[in-house]
Length: 123
Image 1 (cartoon, rainbow, N blue to C red):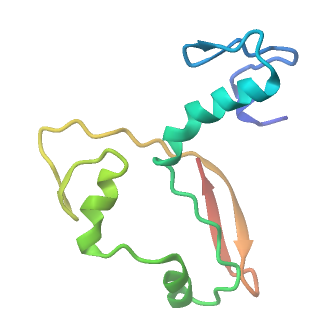
Image 2 (image 1 turned 45 degrees about the vertical axis):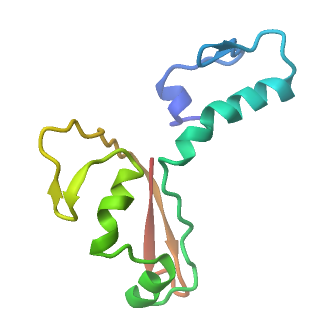
């Protein structure tokens, strides 16, 4: 697809997957290879935050109520789930290598009754 990540990485039609991670999938059925792929992707889900836009929110207050707010007390434990080490909601732990965050904007969508709310798709 034009503009896709596959195009940016120069993936060519007809290429075949032969390994997933360190495991060969040659000779496997599609179902078997798919199970290997799903198993290898399972740890990634714990490091992703995926939220669907609440399309019926008509104000910032209503949107916040539907999406939820972590609160200052929950920030440290929330960040730990993603490998970050913080002393407090506003202080990083010194001397600890923090994970690198890479955010790519992949587009945006308008939602809401009058399509007044913009949700950005971040990769």
